Image (cartoon, rainbow, N blue to C red; front, side, top):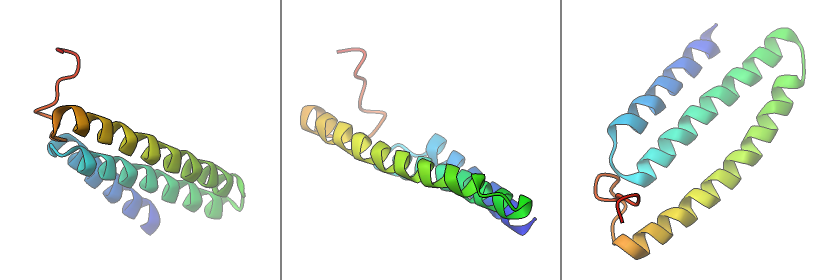
Length: 96
């Protein structure tokens, strides 16, 4: 029960940060916080039910998160080279 509450708090903090921040790197960090909250809940559910499926989902989610961060940072570097900013309000790629 305590872990579920902690997971929910972490998820809400990540969601709040993703919606309120304007720096793209901070938004990526908030998305990672949300993903880690989901991973914590998977592990807690696996321990509660005595099943290893939660652990397996978490390992795959961590691997996917590593790829997501690498691709996200590469995109941000490319955007920074073109627009010289990573503020989400200043970047409007669909208009150009």
